[in-house]
Length: 512
Ligand code: ACM
Image 1 (cartoon, rainbow, N blue to C red):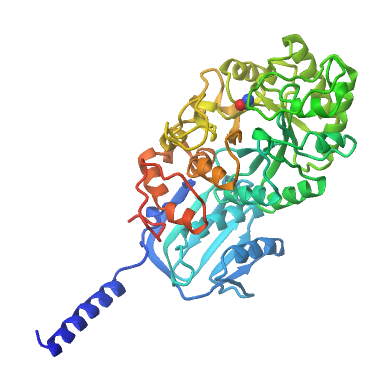
Image 2 (cartoon, helix red, strand yellow):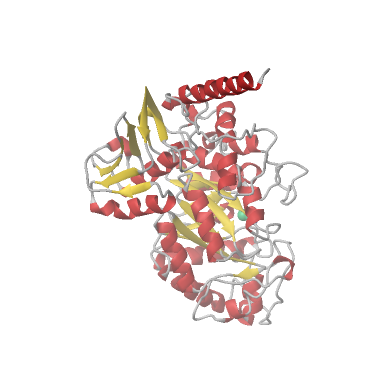
């Protein structure tokens, strides 16, 4: 080949390549080929494309949505506010759509505009999460979205995750990052396990030793830590801005060594216990027949209720093996009265079903089907966190670098593939209030450890809580999940690359 024909050859190859690129749509025109997680309740695809250049204008039809527009612009800088009905994205509150309820939304994409409407701002927030998932990863490209309508609303009112900040302490910034994780998948509850044998993590002003002494260590002997009430309120607000309620847990009467080391009068022999940095459970108990214990619980719940705008206080109640059964029941009955006195609704681990709990109290099933049956017989609502399926501190397989395996090995398919309705034969599906995926942190020391155990299982739990059972299929979920690997990487999330998922390098959220 002479030089001239070499050049024309290169030119032809280049032109063919460029034409090819130009003809190839960067995104699908089929909205139903989305890889959204959680899967929406209803989708109608209309087969055209919405095209957009470098900015994306946003108009709000109601001033109460300003915070949400600000949130969106903070998350994705290509969005810009305008005051025009022709904006690319229109956010509107239009009450009167019964089916959408308090949390649902409708997202309509036409050739010329995207609109999100809902009965409440919370629905708009979830519509924005869906829209952000539909956008391509790299922000500098033009946006092409398939047209159609998504109508979406949750299966359960309670969709949560728990973070244990006692076994290892995690500071305010880590908790905020965790809140962002769960908000992106439309979860609405963060349960904080604030106290355990290894550390007391919340300031109680009238009991300063709880933090001066009881917060001073953690599993393995590290420095521990605690939240001041101001810091706690900052986290509560950060969560509320993302429509997440924080449920504080004070775990009593067992799991209390940090408190027993801080106040001698909580021990039946009147002597302070020792701080504990191991990982055993079931050895500690508050002295259940001493009035000092109930005075203590009263001031703790009083201060906690005052910094808890949400309706719930979690009192733990699990694994009180060092408390006699009749003492345990007496204790739970008295604590129920204290929680009610401060106008809060009691939640406890499944053992509390053995006490006389109020009708509106809720039982969190982690272990015992018979406790769930007991709760159901009394008409109490149940939150499902079955350890064998939903404990994110369980290893994925025997090679996982951290985690436990006492309940099960929980690969990504096991975490996803269960139906809350069929966990208990004796519990009517109407009594299931929702699901929660807990992360206990005995083996979890830092944010990277959190990310490794939580991602990608969290997305499956979010989908179990949100999506109708009829749209949930492991094979389809696995394909959708594969598109999130590059998204996790873009957010610097150190996830577990399960061999069950084909983690291709993808920029698009569409699979076809
Ligand atoms: C628990 O895992 N002890 C609730």
